[in-house]
Amino acid sequence: MRNLLGSLMSADRHERLPERSLDRYDRYEIDPPEPSQIFIRLGVLLAIALAFGLAAELLARLPLR
Image (cartoon, rainbow, N blue to C red; front, side, top):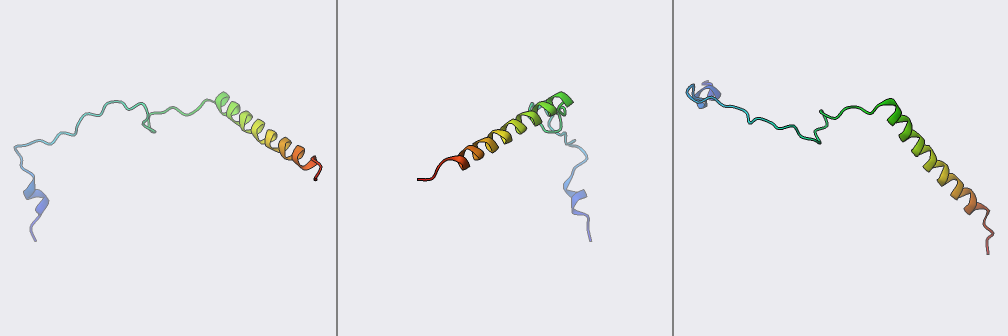
């Protein structure tokens, strides 16, 4: 069986990959969050959860008609 990949590529032409510019939104180039940022995010999520709990508590205390 003949190797088709070797016959398709010529030695005269060098294939160059296009140079990649730095993508601002490339997930491999984004730095991980700092510990302070993690705690801020957790604090915001905790405040949102407490606000939902308070709203549920207040709705449960409303008198039914």
